Picture 1 (cartoon, rainbow, N blue to C red):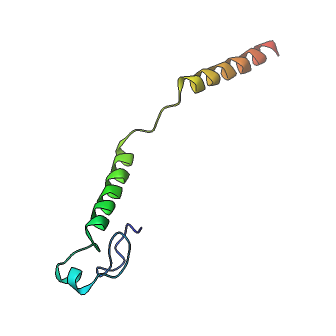
Picture 2 (cartoon, rainbow, N blue to C red):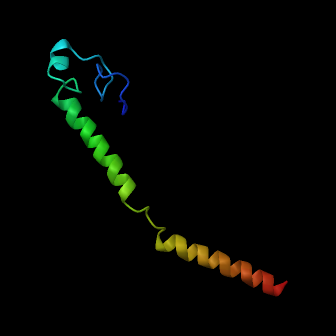
Length: 78
């Protein structure tokens, strides 16, 4: 799958050369399935950019806090 325009005579999804029929219709895809698959991929990429990164789980934060406390205890005892 390619997400760039190599040549206007090639499908935006698979990169294969378009038929004369598709060029006459000014189509950018080989067929309806490639059009929907390409749009689905673009939507997923857009959503991935908009959604915030997942935060660390509470278990991970707790472990981080305990390690930090242990380091502070070691510094105080030294």
